[in-house]
Amino acid sequence: MHRRHLFTLILATAAALSLVPVAQADERGSKDEAKAMTDAAFEHLKKVGFEKAAKDFTSDKANWTKKDLYVILFDLKGTFRGNGANDKLVGRDMSNMKDASGKLIYAAMMDTVAKGPGWVDYEWANPLTKKVEGKSTYVRKTPGGDGLVGVGIYR
Image 1 (cartoon, helix red, strand yellow):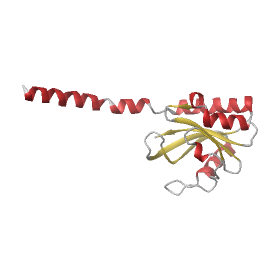
Image 2 (cartoon, helix red, strand yellow):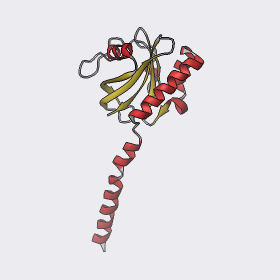
Image 3 (cartoon, helix red, strand yellow):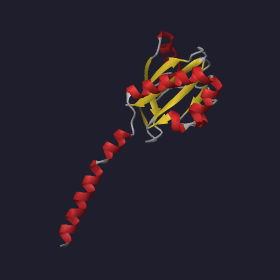
């Protein structure tokens, strides 16, 4: 009888563990969701202006943070003005920030938006896993051209 209970426990544990990757996959946003969220953030910037939108993107988690997706907003100098994942980054100059591979992240984003909206690949800490992961961020110029706004996915 003891072995039967142990076997049942092992099977139940294995079944439960097999669900973990599915749960994590549900917490990850898609490229389509990131692009749609960036476009919504762009429209919000047009509606309420840069300063109000910056505050909203940072503090209004219900509207601007979904799964592992969150809005980032930079001014033209490379200063974080809004960050839905880490409010401690707001106000920090990120113009010379490099990822783990040495890529200048803000410069790559500015190069991209100079040509139009697009995707930038780099390495960044995932707020859910707390690990540095590959990230692709969809970025576009703000409506007034006074910065850039984006949302990224972890690959």
